[in-house]
Length: 279
Image (cartoon, rainbow, N blue to C red; front, side, top):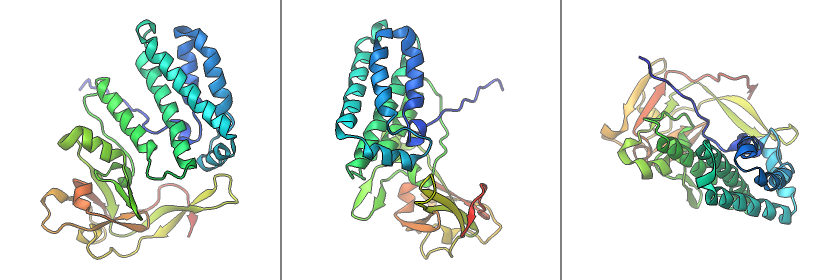
């Protein structure tokens, strides 16, 4: 009774498609804190506007189409503004912590785009940035945090891809928090699931669709769930036989599930909650 529940965004600015929302926040803060930095921020905004948009994939395409010199200038200017923030911290007014983190996320969005353009798939700046935001919230005094994200982001171990592993959000948090980080995965034995596929002719470059879940794979965590119509929570920490895979949309991820998650909530039936196209 009397407790306040706060909500906070976790991901990179502008749905990974634009740093302009972060720059808007910085503009409001610097208008009072450091008006002379406005010229620097204006140059950053002009460059960022070359790719910024409401949709992730078109924004990434526009970023790749930018002149390399412009991409490099944007990175250098963000580093310059970051150094200015840190150097002037003692004389900056209240609100510094939030503004500095906004700048950090804008900088990490830029680094995420650079990594993708370079084909460095394993350099998962996005999830590292989300982990930084969780850490920042804890450092600001949050007594505890409940995260909502996809299983693959929350798992304790790296996400395995062909030939390499990708560190994810939960991987970073497990390193920082140890046993204080508890992971609940969500899956289902049967039903339908939303998924996505490429659609080059659509503005977003992709579309959602709905598809039936296949039968649980042998050795999967889904095969340990009770039959349809029954909700169940498995405590993976006390299982005798460790499952070797878990669903990912309509597919399967092969991994030591008990190392990735502490608990698994099995829904009685999955049905898409958003309008999707028939498969």
